[in-house]
Length: 565
Ligand code: FES
Picture 1: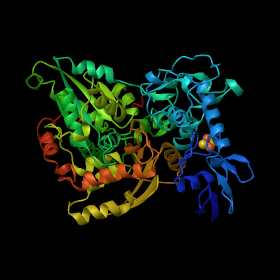
Picture 2: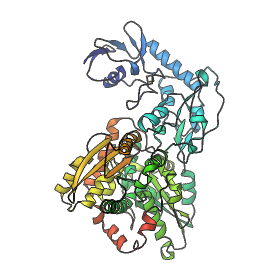
Picture 3: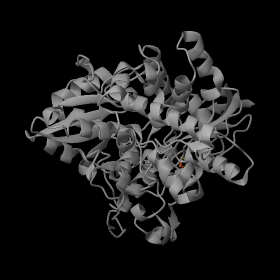
Picture 4: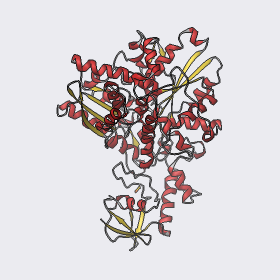
């Protein structure tokens, strides 16, 4: 508790852990490249440097606030200092800004403009290094790395994976994997969180847009899209619409305009997932199957289990993810010559997640030797495609998803937030669908604050112990407790990214907590206004099970065997 004077104005502080947070609280946007409130403080870039009343300069991100401090954030000395830092960073940086994938989103580019860096007086002394294209999900360009260390810290601190680290010293320092292996051969789970925290184009999404444009131009191909729940609450931000508002109707309209023949909603196949996963859960509980049941819809988590907890691979649900179920069902539907009408079907999924690109290539994502999902594009790539077409997204009239796979329940919509899968499972298992029942489920602990949520629900005379986790470092903590016998659960839901898919590695990047929360609230709002709340009350799901799916449930909705990559 105390007061500090910032640029002549007194600002009170309470529990802020550093001076930078108080400066931001005062409404001053001080530049930073290596600071993130969710990560440990690194203090490498020095851009957040401020000056005190004795002319001493220090990095505000690494300085604890003291009562009575007097600081200045915008003196001539600081402006000169920041400009020099940016110039030096640019000197050691590949400067192909106009053709860089992050052009317009790069923090270094923005700061160079903001501080008037119009020339770089130093030569780039760094040897040009090859790109690492080995991952199905991300591209690493070491020539654009500014050594902020964000990727290193997010990979180890938030994700508990730790495949990136610093190597060498001084001017030779660089970020690399152990033994400089290609990232696609490491234990990287493809979550893309390193890309979210990277301030430049050093880590970017592996882009599959051009291949999709090509199939859209082919008259002999039926191009079918599926859109995941979390995508709809992130696209609007990019076009200046209300943050977190669901714009699914506009997305459907934009995809139709681009030439997609059918646009389906992944909430439909999320309903299928719940039908199957809740049945599998009951079967395991009643017949002494492997418990805890581990959810299988997050491919980064599944790979994490395969790499770090292989002794638990039989605990992972055999259910395909909603992406896998939708693509499997759609491809099967169009295998019937009557439905195919002489056209080949290509399935494109729009996902908030970079790891879904990896999932689509897994050996168990094929049916009858054919790839179920041909292309996975992230929300970020969808936004870029809409921009390329010149469609006026804000003024687009909403359109409905196509039938027969376009209608999902509210339970399917909330798959995009941490706890959503579990909440939908509980809705499926608990009888009744009145408001009081749904409210009591929402309040059972599944929506509590935090990245690890433990709670118990009574079901058929037993106490079902559940743990809902987001962030793989948290999953590691819990799984180690389960492995040692310290904790016991019946069901564990894990989403690799903190807060769930709404903050997936393929979403447009945001660091503002309010925007993060607005995406979660947007999905809960979409659930609130949905007519059907439970998967087993979705009429298209009921008719699918009664007809087309009969006898094909295992083939189209389940994985034959565990497969992590
Ligand atoms: Fe403080 Fe980089 S943000 S040193």
